[in-house]
Every structure is written in C-alpha cells, then in structure tokens.
Amino acid sequence: MSSSSSCSSSLTVIFVVFYLLVVSSNAQLTTNFYSSSCPNLHSTVKSVVQSAINRENRMGASLLRLFFHDCFVSGCDGSLLLDDTSTFTGEKMARPNNGSVRGFEVIDQIKSAVENACPGIVSCADILAIAARDSVVILGGPSWNVKLGRRDARTASQSAANNNIPQPTFSLSQLLSSFEDQGLSITDLVALSGAHTIGQARCTSFRNRIYNEIGYNIDASFAKTRQANCPRSSNSGDNNLAPLDLQTPTYFDNDYYKNIISQKGLLHSDQELSMKALTEGYANNLDTFFSDFATAMNNMGDIKPLTGSNGEIRKNCRMIN
Ligand code: HEM
Ligand SMILES: *[C@@H]1O[C@H](CO)[C@@H](O)[C@H](O)[C@H]1NC(C)=O
Image (cartoon, rainbow, N blue to C red; front, side):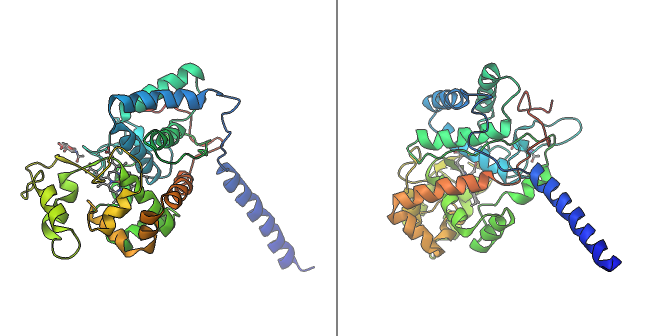
C-alpha cells in the first residue's frame, strides 16, 4: 500500500470524525425533548398564550411572527428576544422589526411560568416555537407536534436581521431566494405566507402597493378601501393598521389565498404569490394548506438550531445568563 493512499484514508477518517462532531453538535430536534424534564411544558405555555389571546386577539398573530423573525436571523435561537446592551445592538430595532414586532411581554410571561414549573430547563427559542403553534391552534388553524431541543444564542445581530428578513416589496424571485438561503422550498414559501391569514400591517408596509400598483395587479375597489385609512404622503398615518386578511384577520383559514386570487393581497409580496399554482391549490383546499403549513412550520423550525452544548438555556429571555 502506498503512503499516499494510507495518508488519504487517514484524512478520510479525520474528515468523518470532524463531520460527525459538527453534525452531532447540530443534532436533530425531537418532539419529546422535554417529556421527562418538563412534563407540564405544553399545558403551561398554552394557558399563557390562551389568556394573552383572550385579552387581545391579534396577539396570536404577533407571537407567530416572532418565531419567523427569530428563525430567519441566524437560526431559531431566541436571538430576536435579546434587548440591546452596551456591548451589542440587538435585532428588535432592525428595520423589519422596529415599531412592528410585538409580544415580548407575553414571551416573558410564558418564560416565568415555565421557569416556575421547570427551572433552567426550557430554552426561549423552544418557547417561541411552542407559542407559535399554540397561537395557530387557538385561532382555528392546524396543530402539529413541535420539534424541540433548541438552545439560546448568546448574541444577536441587527445587521443580519436587516439583511435576512424578507421585505414586503420583494418580487417572487427575491422571496424565493430569501427562503432558499434558509434551506426552505417554494412550497414552504407559499404555505408559510399563509400566516398572513391573521394579523395586521402598518400603512407604511403597503402604501406603495395601494397607490402605485393600480391598473395591473390590485383590485381597484380594494385599493380605494385601503387608501381611506392610509394617506398617500409618507409621514402621515404610517402606523395606521389594516388586516392582512380582508375577511377574517383573527381566524386562521385559507381566505388569504382567495384574496390573492382576486387581487386583494395587502402586501406586494403577498400578491407576487399569484404567479404560483400552489396559491390556487391552497385557496381551493383548506386541508392541503393546513397540512403543508404544519410541515413548513417544522421545516422553518429546523433552521440552524443550537443544540448539545452550544448556546445556553437563558434564565430571562431578554438577556444572556
Ligand atoms: C414571505 C415573506 C414575508 C414577508 C415579505 C412578510 C412581511 C410582513 C409585513 C411587512 C408585515 C406587516 C408588518 C408591519 O407593517 O408592522 C407582516 C406581518 C405578519 N407576518 Fe409576515 N412576511 C412574510 C412571511 C411571514 C411568515 C413566514 C410568517 C409566519 C410563519 C409571517 C407572519 C406574519 C404575521 C402573523 C403578521 C401579523 C403580525 C401582527 O399582527 O402582529 N410572515 N409580514
Ligand atoms: C426605531 O423607531 C423609532 C420610532 O419610529 C425611531 O425613533 C428610531 O430611530 C428607530 N430605530 C432605528 C434603529 O431605526
């Protein structure tokens, strides 16, 4: 045997060991991760989410969105929840988040209830994943078993939040490449966008669409309705709200896709999905939407989790230990 082939086989061994270390430290999430360490986790989270939604229906939408904005920025690692400190600027003030993401107080309430039940066990990243599922279920959507076992980041990145969260002005190809960058498919893109069946958007997010897209991809009377509460000139009414789903913004259904088909998507990015046959499929079949949405939520939840000994289990979701 030549020295070069034994050299290359030991290189192979080194490579395999290295690969296993890296991949196993990025171990699989599992649905029963806390079943013995925190048996009451799911009921604890659900009751706090339920009372938050009882207080304000929109909170279900806000909690669902938190999970998305966490996962798309360096993985589902709770980085979104960190407050700014003297050593780093967090994600809360990044452009897609500032003045728009909400629900942090509810996450705090869930975290303290969970800490009472099982101190030091459950990550903030996993709490976001469970709260998102519970919100969807409470508002009438599908249920799924949430994969768990994420740990919390010890840092956050405002610039990554600015760069990685897709924008409402995006074209279909920009949306696709944003999702592809996260390892998500076109089915995930179209199914996850169905989250816009609940919640609200600010005038600043859809002003351009309702004034400048008339004549080619927006229903004229819908545009007019939305213009009534969203003045043309920026810096007036920027924060005025409109429902993302015209008919039922507090009920998780497939009306979002029906709106798109009738050119009544609120965001430019929503209306871009009209070019995909999947949109019509989901408009016509609630069950397919529900089952693809559930799958896509677990796919999104798989984005770069911290596992094993990486990261930490934060005591307070707003700050590292
Ligand atoms: C496909 C790319 C996406 C874009 C461009 C986008 C953009 C937006 C924008 C601009 C808003 C309104 C923000 C504001 O004006 O304050 C919004 C709201 C919302 N988004 Fe998305 N989004 C996308 C995907 C998603 C995904 C994947 C989810 C969750 C799975 C999601 C969940 C929500 C929810 C629930 C709201 C309403 C939040 C509330 O009422 O507090 N979005 N989105
Ligand atoms: C966040 O929004 C507030 C209020 O609109 C604004 O004063 C502030 O400059 C914004 N912060 C950043 C970092 O953009």
